[in-house]
Image 1 (spheres, rainbow, N blue to C red):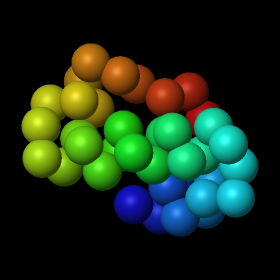
Image 2 (cartoon, rainbow, N blue to C red):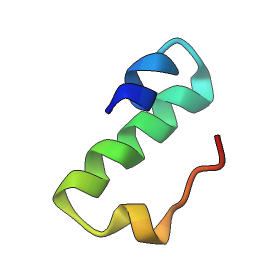
Image 3 (cartoon, one colour):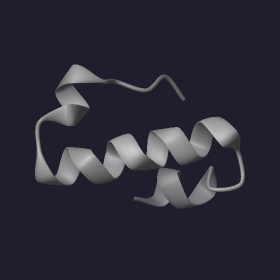
Length: 36
């Protein structure tokens, strides 16, 4: 995801990136909606 790559340097960005990555495989995005 672009956001995940953008916030790759940020600590929160890494966590968000993981959630975004999981969202592709499962409905994690609906469960966890990051507020950017």
